[in-house]
Length: 292
Image (cartoon, rainbow, N blue to C red; front, side, top):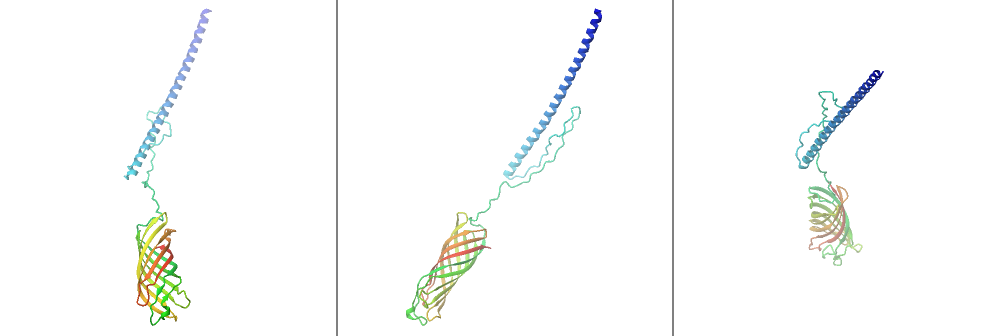
């Protein structure tokens, strides 16, 4: 009886020991599988870090080449992130596929700055302008002659007007041009006469820009004038071609890239003759200018 009980105890102990050994082996296998998974993840992370490091190196090289104006070096292909797990049981693991990398275009490292209207153009520009203004003439002595009675020897003119057009070329701070103008004004006493001056003037000017769209200018002009003076009894008493000059100054404002306006003061004077004194005047004129 005792021997039988001992045999049963030994059998139970053997069965329990075998079960514990099998469970221990299963745990060891599970730990090995987890260790293999961790090793795979570590390998994937190393590949990602390597790829990111190479991308950063290429980006820094491109930035340095763009800053110095050098040509970009050929692209080095970088492995893409692994998309599939590499089986640990495979004795020859499959390498991740190499993905093509897009080549960056060599773009300029700066943005062009648009030119402001107020800056003086450095290139030659042709222009056309029309103008009109308010003329304040000086009095003129008309010498006695066959056409003028002695009592009409002084011409006391009222204020009149001017109108004209011109064209020229702008060199930046300097400009040259030509204008054709007409000035007209009456005598202050009714029936005492009238005067007209038609002038072809060659002008030169110097101008400087200020603020954003404005210029200040000074100029001088010289050219012939056809002066017509009417005294009683109503006919043209004198018609003379005389050399004339003018001095001008004013400001201009640019509205668009091709259109601007100008406001100027002009002092004009003709030469004198044996028949009359110089015909001089002060004028305030406004002009509209278009770049061609």
